[in-house]
Length: 219
Ligand code: C5P
Image (cartoon, rainbow, N blue to C red; front, side, top):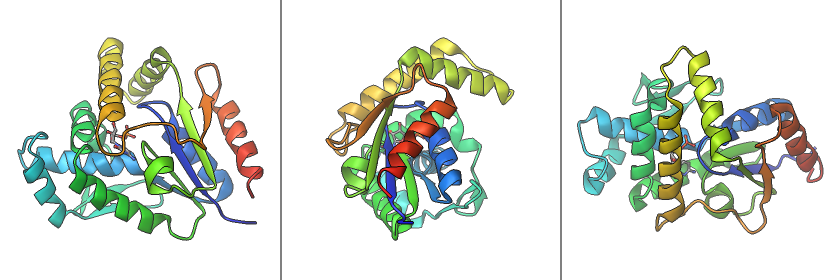
């Protein structure tokens, strides 16, 4: 069977990574979480005590940045396991700021393209279908209402035993979307040839089978 490349883009907390992971497992494809890479840059910025707004300092950090993503999902930044620490709120907001910088985008897009070489991959992010893999055989634009996205994230946090504030989550998601959609370089938008899936009223299983139907039409 042909091994294709699949791009899943969409706003924050739309469940892209959950779906991407499930589909990757079914197809035996490699899943690449590109958001985690921007989160690593934000985490390194925080760790060095630098300001997210300091473009020069953030860009300088890239020279010594080694991001390793293991197949089972562990993420290492310069040898440190950052899998959970990059999920903090402060890092999410920071990722949305540092992802505006050209040097950061160039550095990570190159890595993502290298990792995606040969197909049999599923990448999720904001610019996969429009920039990173413009030739991906299947492009999905996954959306859901803000209420729905915030509530899902809130439940997820509670299940993980984390403190969680629904209204704060809603604000954070809205702020990130606004930044991600309005930045100059590679803003979040639906690629012309992407298929939109609104998951607000769908179960996980329904979304996965819709994506699998689309995959099957391409292979
Ligand atoms: O997907 P996730 O929410 O983990 O991404 C964190 C942030 O990284 C996003 O809000 C966005 O600013 C940035 N990002 C991006 N391009 C991608 C993936 C993520 O700009 N392909």
